Image (cartoon, rainbow, N blue to C red):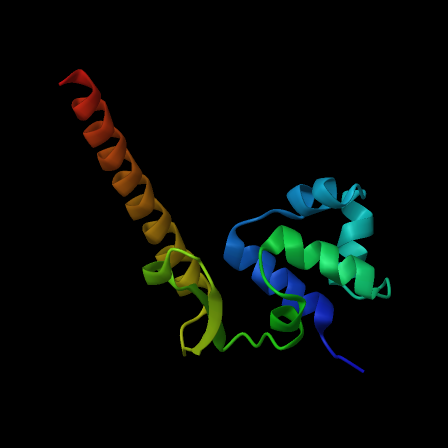
Length: 123
């Protein structure tokens, strides 16, 4: 039996910056019904695990094997966005801060690229 699956889902959801309301809406559930999944008051089916993993953009196996000492990273060099797990002694809060910084950097990069495209169209 897999233990703490609800806790693992909650940690990944928080790491991704998603609210329970967001996930519940995507699953077409009430917030309370989704909360019961995370608190393990409701037994999680394979089908529901697959749906949640799709929303969280991780493989079901990554949820099952998730440990708060592990961090999900994207391999940005391949442009495929393949994910892998890397060991890290960083707290969830520190990971969240880093995640937000990476998102801000990505947004700045997109703005720069959009400006370059716009400048080329003007010429």
